[in-house]
Amino acid sequence: MSKGNGSNFIRVLLIEDDEAQASLIKRQLMRYEDDFRVEVEAVTCLADGLDRLAKQHFAAALVDLDLPETWGTQTITSVTKAAPHLPVVALTMTEDRETAIAALRKGAVDYVVKSDATTSLLVRTLRYAIERKRQQEAMARHAQELERSNHELEEFAHVVSHEIKTPLWVLGYALDMVREEFGDQFKGDLLKVMNGARDAVGQARAVIDQLLAYAKVSRRGRPVSATDATESLRQAIAALQVSIDSTQTTVMHADLPTVMANGDMIVHVFRNLIENAINYRADRPQQVTIDAVPSANQWVFRIADVGMGIDPLVMPKIFNLFERGQGGSGTGVGLAICKRIVEMHGGRIWVESQPGEGSTFFFSLPGANGASAAHQQAASPAVA
Amino acid sequence: MTCNGVLKYLLVEDDDSHAMIIQRTLERDEIPCHVERVSNGVDALQYLRKEGPYAQTDRPDVVLLDLNLPRLNGHEVLAAVKKDPELAGIPIVVLSTSDTEIDRSKAYGNAANSYLVKPTSFDQFRAMVHDLNRYWGVWNRPERETWKGH
Image (cartoon, rainbow over all chains, first blue to last red; front, side, top):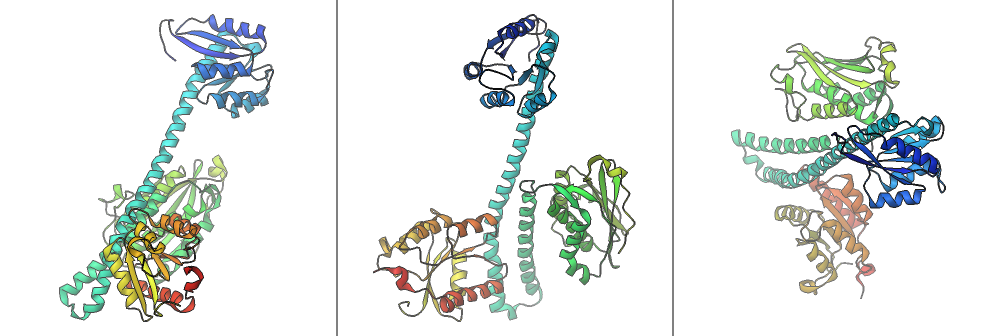
């Protein structure tokens, strides 16, 4: 809405079948002359209203819910369908809250009870309706933009991965074929170089797979529901059982709470963090302890280990793509994926660490019963 | 029955190195076979339809199809073959580096007979080629008469 010296007009469409009521509202609106003036185009039926909307531009519409050919929320649906970007204010006969709320659900931005329709109320309602609609549209555009860029990232990763995987395939097979035919002739440094080359191909392939996994982290088709975090953790542990056993790692955990999350994604976070602890273990056997504590309306999960700890130089960028500590065997994508998942759930992830002593990763997730997480009993102490 | 009793593959692959590795691995397998190669989708269809330079060429028993091909891609070739009543019976095995669900379900949607992802190690690839050869050359040898026409 433009501010000015009273010479700015906003055009409002009024759809109201009661002519006396219509002229009353029109008079009220035209009486206003401050930062702008209101120009009212009044029609008495929906068909005429839709016709005007098709031909002219309006800043907002005031729509009576009960018209000759339509009534209730159906009226709002017809108008918002014809002009999806138009702020629509419903006019109701009485303080019928249910109908008013139903109208809001169908796309109206506000409602006014006709008998209360003073100049100041009407102008204020229109002013807020226009502003609110503008914000709604900006948010919708932003969400759309985000969805589009996520989709583009996924497509980009898919194309790039294919274009890189193809030459890698040739390279890997060629190295294997050469080793098969001439392997007994490789000695000393040449043998090391050939083995290194084969490992490098494997590493590149793993990075591509991880990048694809990172790009695929998306809320699309992954509904959020009440998820038992203990069950998610058990699945993560089961998937890692072989490497847990072979490295003599101990994983202990408390009973974990129920959170609002996508179960598969939470399994992924636990799995990545435990795998990380295994990869960055110290000379002693690794011990991982997992529990959760309430904080405001969220739960904070803690994954503590007695591994090598994190180099203070790496700490600030540890959740960035392709950052990794020295001595581990990770690809530098796992923690970036965890961050993406946690943030998609409205949570936060961070880490505290003592080099040489171990690290504790923290991440927060909304509790399954909203604001009451803090009132639930804290998780019991860690048990094996 | 094939003309000389040896299973004949048509390999549709644009990349020379890929083609060489596949061809060499197949032809070195203990089950004898013969591999012909074309390097784009248009040539593949001409070959199967016995058009142009391929008028006198026998049709293959099995087609090994890459997905990323110039001119007509693998999905398009697959769809065209399976829609053609004269060619639809020729088994088509998609051989791809892509293990994405989109490519796999699209290929099966177009009635691919099989979808194989090239494994990461050459040893595994050789084992896969052997299985493939045994499947089509021994257990499921295509009967040419059923689709060849007269």
